[in-house]
Length: 209
Image 1: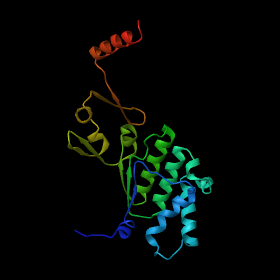
Image 2 (image 1 turned 180 degrees about the horizontal axis):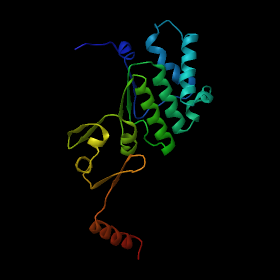
Image 3 (image 1 turned 45 degrees about the vertical axis):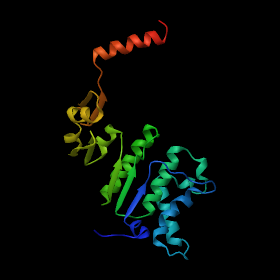
Image 4 (image 1 turned 90 degrees about the vertical axis):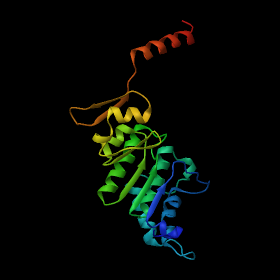
């Protein structure tokens, strides 16, 4: 098995963890420029080419206007797009995103999935840990479904996102429907009438009715 030093590995794989804590005083551009550090010697500073690349990555992710803004003053969605720009600036063949859409609204969630698909179209290998099944079925080419402490299925979304497999993975009754117009999958939970009646009775007690 081939082994890499940390800095060398950072030129192969870019990783965006689920929760990123950033200190005060860093601007959006500072964060994105950090993606260039694996390519610099300890005595070197960022070059003009590094800065141009960082700004191009910010422009692509729609964050160019945040280059000089303190990172602690931007919204959650803006911060996540800045971090995506940092990943792009790292210029690695493999990108690993750990729940990159957690806590974001639907606009930012879909935007990040679009970025990931576009990167894959450019030859990057993009691995994402996600819970947004409807977006995953729309944008991902391959799904690894985990459940019951193991890998339940591996394949195209249409083959993996079945009611049987998803119900096993989530320990719930899952409904999978296909949109007749755009053929996208629509995945929801399904509640039995007995469960609905029990929930309604409990709600009446809670509300004092």
